[in-house]
Image (cartoon, rainbow, N blue to C red):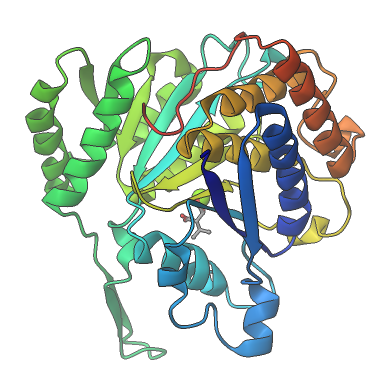
Amino acid sequence: MPTKHRIAVIPGDGVGPEVTAEALKVLSHAATQFGFAYETTEFPFGSDHYLATNEFMPAGQLERFQEYDAIFLGAIGDPRLPPGLVERGIIAAIRFGLDLYINLRPIKLYAEHLCPIKAKTPADVDMVVVRENTEDLYTGMGGYFKRGTPDEVVIANQIFTRKGCERAARYAFGLAAARKRKKLTLVDKANAIEVQQLWRRTVEEVAPDFPDVSFDFAYIDAACMWMVKNPETFDVIVTPNLFGDIITDLGAIVQGGMGVAASGNIHPGRVSLFEPIHGSAPKYKGKNVVSPIAAVAAVGMMLEYVGETAAAQAVESSIAELLASKRIPSLDASSGLKTSEVGDMLAGELRRHAAAPRSVTARSVGSGK
Ligand code: IPM
Ligand code: MG
């Protein structure tokens, strides 16, 4: 009997519900075209829910998520609440609570005209960032002393564990081994932050298990410069949590903007969460103008993860096709297309791909297989 994929859906805040609606539209077309079954359960978590109930998620919610194959999240964040509060209470809580130790962020340019860097083409921008997702300055270990006084002291601890480095490194090597160029770059700051030598040692120790993959090291500051000057030098990047956060916004603009960048928060073999990288963009809420492409790309990654490889590739090819042909001319409001129109176009393109599969640009990165 074919499996029925169980998907938890958190539309969230701001433009989250709008982009989620288009993502689910494409998911439903993919199911019809590729003949798989799925069911979704929507959860109301987000700022309205928090303001109404004073809780981010009910007790036992993380356990409940484990009954699902994947979670789709639209966006979280609201200016009515202190910065980061609801993001930490929901996004970070799920990443940490479900031990989603990989944050997988493909950076792929689908159309030359979308790249802000002169003369760079899709052949130059095709990399994947493997961001460690459960450690670093994100653990919240640390705190305040003499808070609010002139003598205030704050401490934030940058935590790395050998286990955390190793599982990220292994995942990244595995991903690199499955890609054409088979190259891994560890991005760190091991010159100024000496303890980051742990990352370098770990990568060196894991490397012999992946003899086909070449690897090198780059400091985060230099890597930012190379990402703009010569993005073609990167294939797979593995990096600690905070650097991964920063470098993937840079990556998003190199691939055309936040309107196209997607991510997967993954614990291989367990329920994992897929989301666009962009935030809730409160000022555009309800206007039906933001690009749903990043959310749809996240659905593509989710389909890959749950084993619907053909559907995943068709989703990616549809995005590539519509952008390269300029039928979707840009990733912001200048496209003149409504959020829902872009969703319709992607669903229509998907139908064409399913009828006549093409493998122009698709290469899967979703599950590292
Ligand atoms: C991201 C976001 C989050 C992060 C925020 C919302 C906590 O910027 O997913 O990249 O820093 O991880
Ligand atoms: Mg970020």
